[in-house]
Image (tube, rainbow, N blue to C red; front, side, top):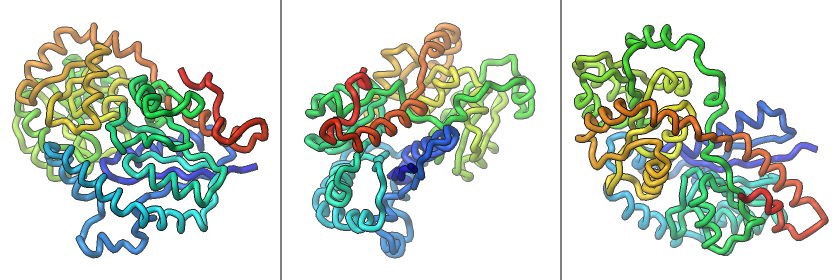
Length: 390
């Protein structure tokens, strides 16, 4: 019997949509008997697009513009304002979500987003009794209160780090409600065989295969901080990934440098470009860090107040594991690169020991959740055996 799954995402930051597409891709490759629907939360909450009509932009556009410009200071306060508004309009949010599930009858509801899990869970419980609700964290840790983990909900939570698992337990979740994976969700392309001719691919970008090469990446929107990084590293060979930020790409191409700087616009083949580099420079987002590490690249990133609050633990995790360096400012990036290049074999050896298989582990968790939900052997909340929790 075919099962229906809903994967709920939004476009704030891009990582939530990326996780949804990664799961969609691997589930199709595995030919599971599941019908997947990717649901943009904001389209459910505002089906007529009134917010866009009133403001001229999608709800997440302001957030994404700030990321593209590197304006992350103050986001902690703005997050609390957003959460206050969500609590204020909680009843209205639940009502709109209930309308959605009046006409959609999935066998599993998967949330890939923070902040809205209380409203999502309550609406699903009221309209889909017995249907499991699972939150898959796309961050390495929660940022309580009311971010990823809502205390007291009879739901399942998938954590990508021991830190997130400990936070869920501290919030009152039992082991049978929790699963620990080996990392963050990545598209299956990051597990494909490596390039057969790396040198030829580098030469095609105007790069010298014999020189240490850094790749600079700030997610799908790029960041204007890359202009400073490229200036500070004018004597270092770089690949500069600009994503959808065409204005940034044009400015980087016009900026002189002593060493080759290859500027790359939006591409679906991020994994291939990462394979051309020896180390990674960028913000400590969970997706970017995980993509770099999966391709064997140690990381140079930032620490401190300029980092988004939900990403600050990522820096702790990275440095404690010895997978990279954290700098107080991009003004220090030349020093950081010098240190990284001087100890590159040591950093790369540590990174090679990291084995993230989360994208293949999560569908198994989904299958177990649906099987246990329909099993007469025990109550519905006992979806998984404790063995699934490390």
